[in-house]
Length: 553
Ligand code: GLU
Image (cartoon, rainbow, N blue to C red; front, side, top):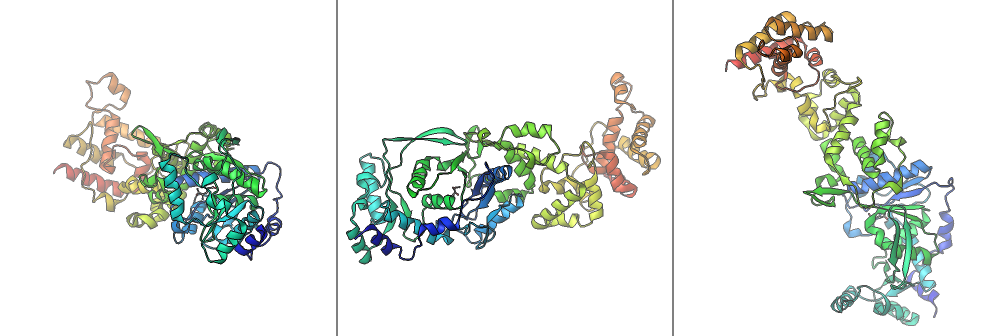
């Protein structure tokens, strides 16, 4: 009996590996083109760290004229959820970095290196497992999970390195005859890789992000095909990234310690190894401690969080570039109006230890992103967010013409307003522009320096009767508030007031504040001239009357 007989018995239908080598040829791409991928498991949860890796991969492929594909790693079928793939596909779409190839729905993919879902590649893995068995580089292992556990316990008790290796790898020494017989007798088995490595030897490896690293060689006879016929992550990684002609494996650094095993698999399979770039996780400052963003503890770890909060995906993406390369910030300062796609990302400038995620900074980025939008864009975004997450806001925004005027306040000029960082801010941000909300607001009017009933009443009445004119330009409008101040005995200029504080009760700014508070119940708003124009004289008058009525309470 020969190894070939054993291999044929285990995988009778598997094709020759040459079939796949020809089917998935080298890609015909320009020198230096990076072929890379995003390879998540469809667990139903898209982690912001995954998106971050995907973004980096997408950018590098684009920058070098390469290919970025989406591969779904669903070999651990216990962890899977329904529609997990669609969730991932949609997230990538939403953030604007669609793959060139890969899965596009639960079961369909596009591209010449398909299938892009591991559970659809079973026969490919089996062909290569068969090949390894024929080569004497893999073998069936009959140890039950309990036996493997027993080995581990023994190792732990004896304080020996755990695992299935060397003398502990019992089934390594099962003869071909015995293996064939046991399989024919219906014994259960899995397939293990026969590692040629030795733990006392070191390998040197150069990681594109981490730099030079040393590791002991792998000597573990890891499982390559599980009892359900599917491969383990390690085996699938080697086969897929070889056949899909990946040049750069960009992935989370939890896999860095698996590099010795992966290089060995590539070597034994006769494949050229890809370059590796291991990305440090996104970190969070938790009361002074730096720790990984956690799916369990941090809502912002979920990509869905950003959509729910209404933080524009463009802002999230721009912020992720900020933490990917510290040079981004300067680039952005020098190129405020360029698309972020023009920024050249550099892998070797990535943080080795993990960049800190700062929500406040992200919201600052979002404010700038939103400030550059037109009123129409703000409207469309706010409305589509509202339709999903806030019916009341959707109702408020129904009068589009009016909403466009509201959003148009201090927008489209050289210093646009920067007071919206997420769509969930919008309702609060614009509520005072709507009578139906404003009139229901029972909070107090926050008058400041000028807070006496008679003074307030005089300002409001005189302003609307004598000074407000909807046709005034901004300068005239402002001059009239000065005149109003003068007529009522307030300083017309702040400077003047400061020079002679005893001569005046207050100054023109304080008069403005009275107008602002009566109109909006806020001390801080965008440009009042524009607010008045949007509200119109009738609404203003009504608000002033209500404010005056309120003084009598
Ligand atoms: N499925 C693996 C993960 O989600 C992929 C790692 C890789 O990119 O190779 O961690």
